[in-house]
Length: 124
Image (tube, rainbow, N blue to C red; front, side):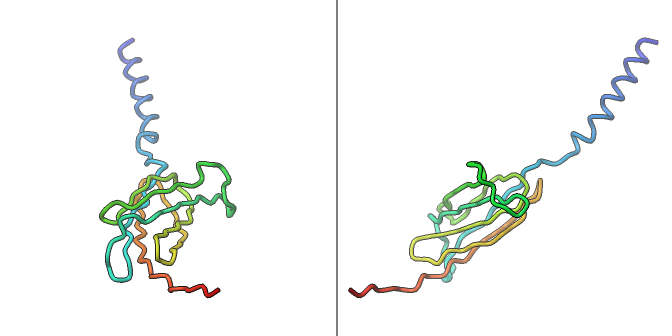
């Protein structure tokens, strides 16, 4: 009788824990490769990600992240699910920006192509 009761309790605990175990992560991955208009990868581009919450920028320090692209122009950042503004910049190139939604347990790819900045000359 006692073994039956213990087995029933164990079965209930296992059953109740299934939804928790089946849940996906609350994080997603933002990844991509930064290239120039000529197709060359940018191995040192700055990627800035800012989180938005309910239409307003979250002012907390953890609301933004920065990363630099690797030698092959790639980047990958784990982020909590939400809506983000992505800004990519590199010397001599026009900046890139886009808003994306990061879903839990998924990978979102943003691979910007940066255009050259126009040459400007200051005449005194």
